[in-house]
Length: 183
Image (cartoon, rainbow, N blue to C red; front, side, top):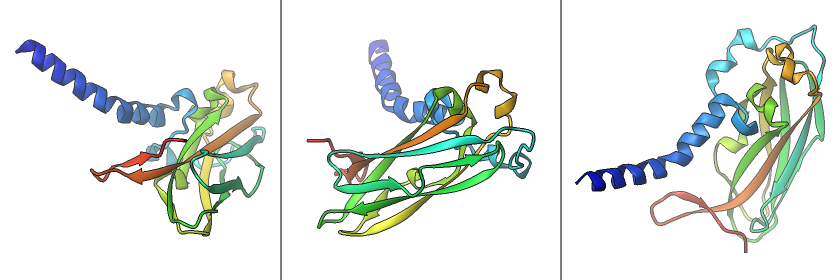
């Protein structure tokens, strides 16, 4: 009886570990994951730190081999003050003759800067379905936390890279969106 209960709890914990880990990373900025916690987006936090240096934000875009899309940033970089909001765009184009669903994963490097990189709005929060031949501009609205310059471990960080990778996805028989493996 106890063995069955432990086995069921173990399976349940395994099933929940990926979403829990993602939630943990998005809340804490662990492992270069940008923070998406909206409590960090109050008006008092969106004031540019005038006495701080500008940080270069470089944009990177990749696609899975299974996804027949082109995906590029419209600008290679922007310079922002901590606390200053910025808007950047990526362009995605479906190069196939079929409608395709894509999912984006993202990361910030250096990893230690992830806790200070906050995305207010991003195409990566939801699936993107492009019709055959369709091209779209996708925004990401972000800011670097105004506490960034106060952290001694950020003194050597002058450039932050925001990197996205798009993967082909489809719905399984249960209605769950899953990535399509690369061939």
